[in-house]
Length: 495
Image (cartoon, rainbow, N blue to C red; front, top):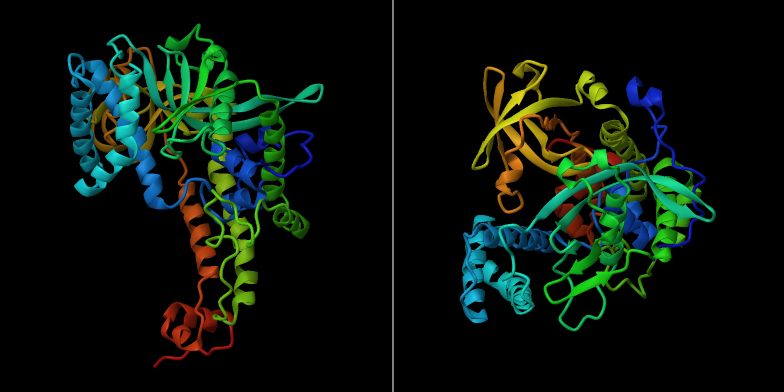
């Protein structure tokens, strides 16, 4: 768990003027709008969240890119599998378990190849993750008992600007946003799913219990009018929390005072790293690191890649490079806060009419859905107001606080109706979710592209640590020579 940090007296929210009329410039006078991933990183280690915020390095527990893509495929296929069984396109009843697994395997191999995996890769993923998962779920009857009346939702985005966490005799309110892998209404479960873990594990993978607890805490903090109207009367406090791996289902208790305490520490680290420019804060971050080169963390992906990096002798101008790059990391974080984090605050703190007036959202009515295309009628404005919305986010189900978000691309306009194409999410979207009643007005939003600033941060960080062990290799690498010319003593000359 994270290093101790004095809990904040209050979270620094943007004031009314900042929300409505301030021109973004300089240091943002508000704290970030954290994600669940930020909190998990901070809980793991202050250095992990430092890398997250300033160097654009994602979840320290996620591992490298291929592993991340495998996890996404696993989650998508489980959603696809459950929908296929529910709507009858995959029949399992009347067969023995071996035949049932064979039918699921055929489904999976086809699905994985559509997602860009080769047949060999899909076969490996079947053996490593999907086969043990499906066998276990067939044996306990969970898959075979899925019926047409079952209700489950996947990839539900949740956010709240004020979530209360107990502290001493009072509370502290913090903002938080995240995405829930699955909400199973039939069995009253909130599920966090991962490909991590082994068959002999007795506990969930590190901090996955904390992650699902945070998401449940976030969901339970919402008011009735902030959730989909069809969820009225649902008490998520009565739902069970589970971390699912290919080999085990781990129940997670909702009441956990340690999680509450470490959440206060995590918010304090996020606040201090993002707002303070004091060298003392940076020093405290690394003084409280969870591991050392001699004793690296067994799970974190940072050691010897982003922490304890090799100290190459070339380029010789590395101190000058580090000094030049250091301010840019924070300036890029400020850019993200002005563009993305403030937008998140506005989305939740301003009224719907204010959001429409400021052009932050457009109101629309879902007309029809066919395949992965939507026909949408723009309400209150001409379709030409979609200029700049070639790529946008639609919430066809729920609200900005809690709902299904899909990314879509504008393909054509007819009168005041627009036709949009979204990523083929049939594996996570139930068709009836998209056929909304006419009185429902799903918002269309243009989300700020803060991921570009994070990519710039991570590219600068990689460039800062590029190097060579000897002069010959350094002279052969044009990037090192260019860095020496810009920051060192090597003259730039045309040959």
